[in-house]
Image 1 (tube, one colour):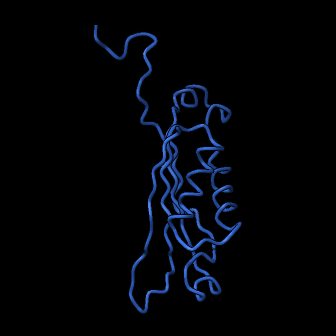
Image 2 (image 1 turned 180 degrees about the vertical axis):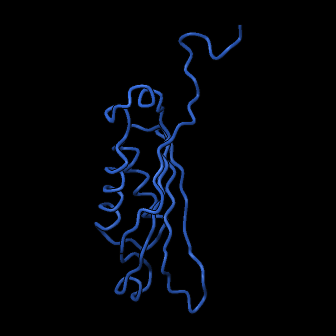
Image 3 (image 1 turned 120 degrees about the vertical axis):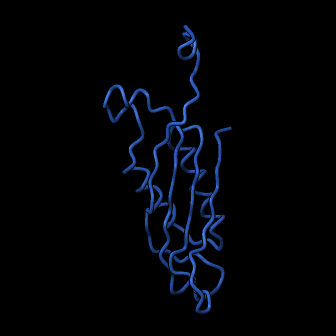
Length: 132
C-alpha cells in the first residue's frame, strides 16, 4: 500500500511546456537611439500545466501548441514599442495566461544587442505569474 495519491486526489503537477530563444527585432528602449536603431530580443517562456493527457493520448488537442505560443510572443512583442523590458515581459505573461490553459507562466526577456558604451553583457528580466 501507500503507492501514489489516493483515488480522486489531484497530483501536484510540475509539467511544463517551454520555448527558448524566440527572437525578434524590436525598437524597445528608453533612449532615442534604441527606439530608432532597434535591437534583437530573445524571449524564453515556460507554461506550467498538466501534460498527463497529452502524454497518454499523443493528441495535439490535449496540450498547448508551442508554434502558436511562439507566433503570439512575436506578435505581442512587435506590435507596439515599450520603454522597459519589465513592461514587455509583463505584457507577454498576461497574454500567455489569458490565451493558453496554464496555471502559471515564467517569461524571460533579454536584449541581445544593447548599447552599453562598449561594455559587454546581455540584460534581461524574468517574471513569474500565476492564474488568479
